[in-house]
Image (cartoon, rainbow, N blue to C red; front, side):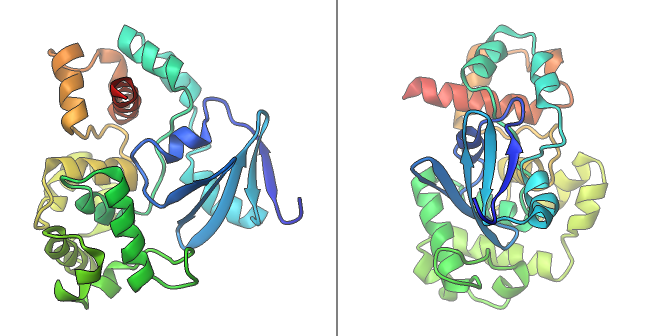
Length: 266
């Protein structure tokens, strides 16, 4: 147990659901453990019936990175208990423990640009190649390359990623972020409408990628990404819009409904 940091298992928390429900793409399951990189740190995490074990993690790293990353200060039990809609109740009952990860905004933006018209295994493959080619550190533990680094590259430089039409959007996003045209701090501080407009100044970023970036990268939990699955959910279950009980936490409700509906189809 040397160098491990252990906390009691938080209420309304499921590690596998958090890391494998379509919101983050750099985590890999290794039996009972999950391995991944976030904010430049590689870590292995394990959930038992009573504990969360952060392997080779200091208390300082936990408090400065992972506590925030998993949104452990937020009372999800209270949030989901207020979902009095039958569909949401069922989704929460079957997949209790999903949380919205607080990801790095640049990584979230770049990842969801890559996600366009793509499936999760291929998204993970492109992102893995992106980090291998341009990230820093050791193999399998490489950092996500910064906007500043990618801004110096060309579309041709990204050919090894096999990202297709998305390559030119990655470069445009990197250049606009690196030169300050897209100001992440301002997006974070301003109301969500500002971020929606700003992010769509990037080539290839439409409403869905902007909403995903705002939800997963800026933790604006009122953001509501709409993809094929969510379109089906809205048409089948909520033709008049989401119920009032989700107001202000639409992004959390969306994540439960998205995962529930997708797993039903399997």
